[in-house]
Length: 535
Image (cartoon, one colour):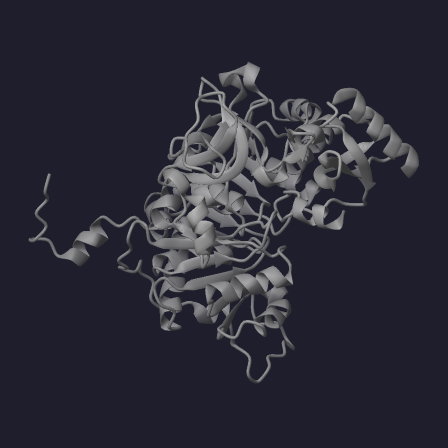
């Protein structure tokens, strides 16, 4: 059907139909003006205050000369200003670029240089570090410091202009009439870099908006007289904290208590104090709640506890269920490139499939394809998990080779191996690059890790492949010893014997390397590329 638009002003038409992430706090403020939207370790903002600050940030960025589409980098721990900088950039049609604090100096500089960033919003506790990084990023002309410019901060004569957060805020307090295309980029998150140099994942206003609605729905966050309450120690520079919690929470009018980092006692105490209802965290964070219950904390307010990015042991799950008697404990999975969550495991849907990743989410179609290829495979066939749907990214910043590989066959290739059974349930095997090819078999490092974690003296384990003249690759177990473990040589022999008794010849570890800690990304993912390089 042809629609005659000749009588409509194109700008007015675009504004009326606008899908903007910057409008998310606007809509929430219109309904929940006096409800607390965000708290941090300094103060709190109602929805009306959040909307006002975000609007003033948007106009302030325009007054700085930042143009539509340009990145606005944010280098900060979790705080209210982080959220305001993100939404303000979105309102102005710019690209919010949260910087991974734990990526290392080299990768932080790479993200800032690769993106062409000209303005950096930085927390005052990181201002000195930021100045050091900015010295290697000639395009950055303005440093906006949250919490005030520290006394004695030495800015080189040829360095950027350093200004305080309050100086960024414009006197104009209106939601800008910015024309924004649905698929215009709103955020750039540099990937965790578990296998290679981080890539800038570009995500659109439509994708983030749809993800906020989808995540809010599947988490059960209500829009009404009583909103969801959550406590968030997950970093906002990662998609789980940003898209999975912040955006979903603001979309549904919830209250989000931001924490600058994770402290087990503080986290559990806060969950109890604020009567949190919906939580998203790593298993080790949720373990703090089980410990809190042992301290007689009342955690009965929790209705959903979603964990991601690491497996949960049966023992912890049982402790957690006892600590959170009225909560659904749910596994969520996905990837930055598809604005997760993309797969959810609700155990009550099918208890026999509790070891799976679960079912697809409302905004995502999950398929299994030939690894790296276009062919879609039948149910119960091993292959690569691929996505299609409105939450899929636009592509990687400045990386045409990666873009060409990502979208082969009209689906987003995830790099995750597994299968989808006849019921539509996704079963994860391993990352493509983490499969160990040993003795003609594809060995799942994840499977071997799960077996070895049952060893009484293994606290943590990661398995990788080492070139082997006989096997092609042999499995090497990198182990962190549990408290009370025997001497090193005895522990190595014990782990090898344990694996040999429970795994096939191809799967069993041929060597055990003992370490004090396993290298991980900011969100707890094991950096196996680093382990392989050290063997």
